[in-house]
Length: 205
Image (cartoon, rainbow, N blue to C red; front, side, top):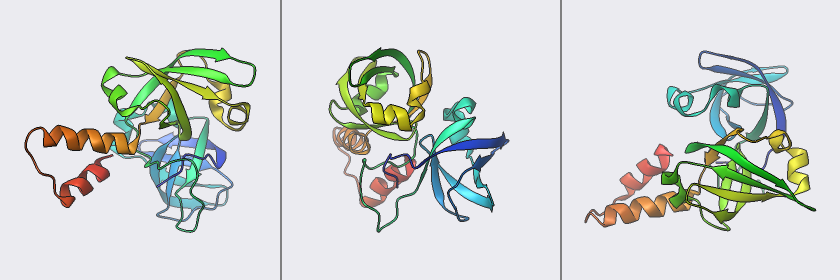
């Protein structure tokens, strides 16, 4: 589990086949879960200046290759004794969004992100969303997208400062919205869910 608070801007040294090599100050251990641009990956090798991660075929089918290139957001998995900030993030990408608008205001910048309409049900006004691993608050929701207001600190400390119109972003929608939608959809069919099915839903995201 993650919080959506970026700990470091790391660098992709190499991405070949299903192995992603990261240059980072973070001292990882084999088996650790680490989110790269919001994607939860497992450490399979460590080096003096970073670590290697394995990218599953399912992840490769969803996440564009350019989201695993150059500079990337990095967050290690949350530990039991950590402060809980941000929001509950699983590191499982639901869809890819596209930046459709950027408006600079006096003390913030508004970003409008377009997504496939079928994902709008999981995006809640004033709720949480994860963009390339960053925990953010949704301001407005539309039929095919949503608006975020980004404060100067977030722009300065993340790669959002480099986003432009048509930039692609990894999106993880709200965990609880997904659960509720799934449960209600199955209840309408007269199906009673057991805890094994709920666990399977969680693992699926």
